[in-house]
Image 1 (spheres, helix red, strand yellow):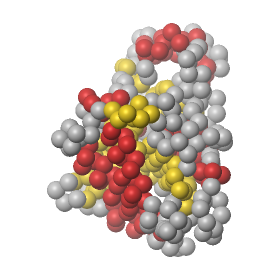
Image 2 (tube, helix red, strand yellow):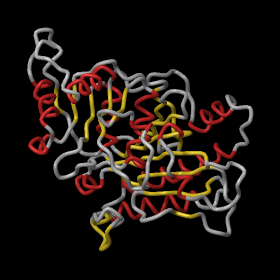
Image 3 (tube, one colour):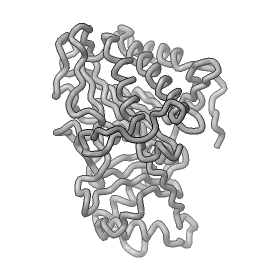
Image 4 (cartoon, helix red, strand yellow):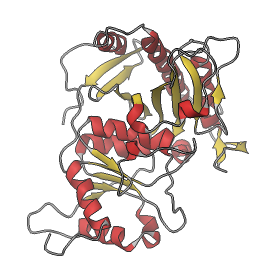
Length: 344
């Protein structure tokens, strides 16, 4: 599969402008929001590459809302996004995986009609070993678009199907920005020599079925029996050659989902006996990643419910997840319902 699947030379600025033309009522506020956000992503990417030189690898002496020791680069990325986004007049409130409560826009700045929810640095456990990490984001409209006061908790606690846009930036061998505003999934690659994101894949379509599964199989003995049965099934050779599947697991959600988006298969982070509600966060990780997967033609559920239909009750709520190719996720759901037979 080629890395570049378009012959058009398009920057992300031009792409945003062309998408805005699809909405005659657009005021330019949303485009301004994205410009501010891509600035933050470029700054984070720069310092990820320089992390060791800047002495920002390693841990701080603080913990986040989840009781996890905060990595220095997490803390830095969180601050960069806040400082890039707080004064543009586009947002009424923000929420971050690294912050205890809502992130309010300073009183001296105008309040806009959008809400930004983000994980500033997904894959923190991989920072010190130079594996792929990234930033995940969701954009919502505030509930009362003409309101000019501070945004509220109810503005943030919206189900994923109400997302205006979602995406992630991955900081690896190249910096990719994978983005959707509900009109398919487009991938941009950052060219640091000219300081621009260039469109390198447009309207990505996930295969109907893949041959890769992605899960932390070290937790096998803590899973429910039906999930263990499904994993065993994937590893068992079949007469039609569709199995066995290959296991690929990086441990950074966006890296595993990015591969799944391109090659198909299934990414799983299930509940287990130690984490009965799962580990990944609904607002910061699952909703934006689910929007991308669905926009590419895939499926994302918690085993029974569509992820983007879940009504959140807390900004740091967790949920199990199974996402990827349609056929693979449907197969998984069949196992979880106890409907799979040995003849299938």
